[in-house]
Image (cartoon, rainbow, N blue to C red; front, side, top):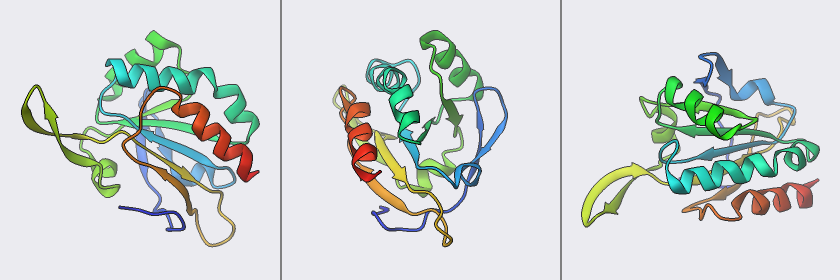
Length: 158
């Protein structure tokens, strides 16, 4: 599991419009990378709408918000449109980034053990000449109030 202070490797995934998005595109800003299990499910909707509702304040704090799940580009587009999400949703159907960040975990669903994506958020700092470093990791995130928690961290770090 990655920890605060670790150098973050660049990545490229497609957004909801099928366009390539790379971490290095945002090397001058803090990046909020939030991983969620599945688009348009109750907890994920609460979390995504929380980031939507605090988006202007997060932008004012200088941050870029990127949501990531193993959904397809098409599913991400549908989710973004349905809830008017103003930030990019990245598709990781092959779970390349999800596995790199070690987020595929055993979960209990209806009494059965299944592999699923652990809801987590990584706050990545701007590049200060040595690459982008991880500022903070939120593991096993509770969707309610999480965006405000991230905003408070960014405002404190400013």
